[in-house]
Amino acid sequence: MTYGKRTLIAVDQLLNTLLGGWPDETLSSRCYRWARDGVRAWPRRVVDGLFFWQREHCKSSYESEKCGRQLPPELRNRGTV
Image 1 (cartoon, rainbow, N blue to C red):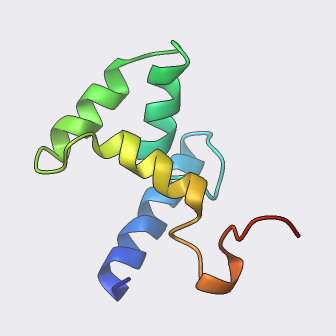
Image 2 (cartoon, rainbow, N blue to C red):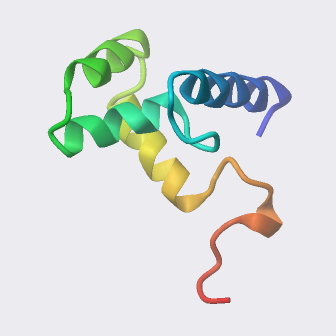
């Protein structure tokens, strides 16, 4: 992962935290969970619209979070402990 992408993820996580979310989750992932859980759908539409060149940006961000792709390799999910 490039330095620029890591920096953008950090800014995204900071923004999510400032808006009351979990500090290690991106705002995009949170927007996907809101839509999935029926809380509110409009934030996902807005964020997906901002990333118009990426199909289902919020969903892919959520899936990336679940897999720990933003983490260093030694901290990613590797099955049981």
